[in-house]
Image 1 (tube, rainbow, N blue to C red):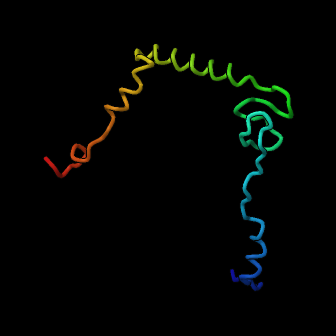
Image 2 (cartoon, rainbow, N blue to C red):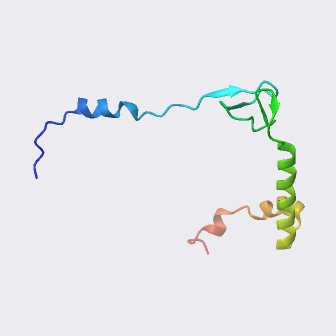
Image 3 (cartoon, helix red, strand yellow):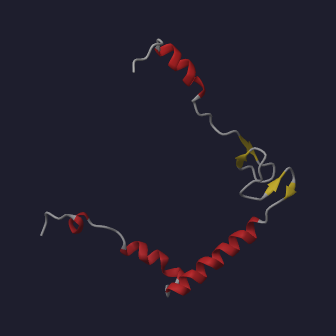
Length: 100
């Protein structure tokens, strides 16, 4: 079926003028000075409009406890995480299929 109406590039560009993406609006926290989204509590200190909303420190402690419990469950030492990264360094000659 043929298209009967004209479709100019100006018409397309006019329709797409609202497709641009704006950067998120950020505000600075009055307590710690870090930037956060407007109308939301600060992720660093947990305050919103001068009131303590989120206890960030307790959330971090809970997360660390969960990680330690999971590491124990897997049978790994939580402090040995750094050593695993050293062993995971890859060498190009080992990865190359051409060299024998």
